[in-house]
Length: 318
Figure 1: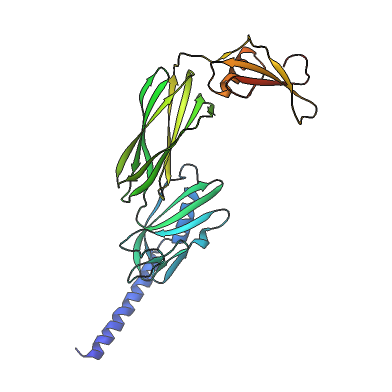
Figure 2 (figure 1 turned 30 degrees about the vertical axis):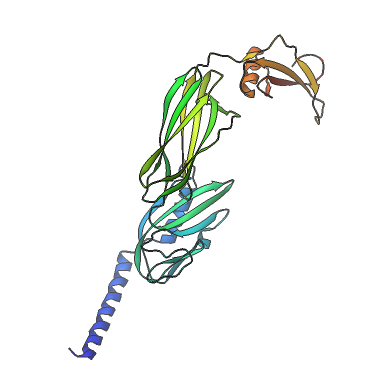
């Protein structure tokens, strides 16, 4: 075959490919990736999905295509872009042969290729902070199970099984605890601080067990709420509800007379009538004990030993 014939055949083949791709894109249009990412970002900001990976799936990217974070930063939201596949992505801010260039601002595709896309958002105070992942499923912090190991005489032991359900290494995992008292209809957070527990690394598709030991002085129904998060791995939350029989009750101290104090900055003048408690571990428990003893009167938490009601004059009772 002559060289000229080869060139002609090559041009004809290229023309046929262009026609084929043109027809294919008309009858089998590719999803609008920008719209899919925008929709996934909206979903990722909802309470149910915050901290969790929202999967878009594998998509074909056309050549000479750049996706920038700015097209998704509409309103109060912070977005970053990440390419996390070593096989398909250059190291961040480096250009290498045949792979994808990226930084947190944008990602550049130089050839037609198929790549997986995912998004995830967390809340930084009141601002959603989101990331768009191209390449592979990112590491994802999960709480697999929360179980009660021991509940005896006010001493409780709880096991939290944290998981990394991905093919990426999860680094700097942190498990934190917040404690509540009350009932299914209303919970009051206790003013108790617990040091968080940490794990440096969890391998892909592996679990790690945290153990918590909590001591209680008051009987009642409690909720232990746990959060597990990792570096660039989102977070997950779960809780456990249990009853405590501590053998000690919070009581009003009726033997100690109440005291009245003028409140500062009230107009007209208001007064605090201070009452006292014994055996309480939390401020709200003391207030609740006096509300129970003096039906129809509201008491404000002050400390585990003191609570007060508000009255209009120095004399008389609340």
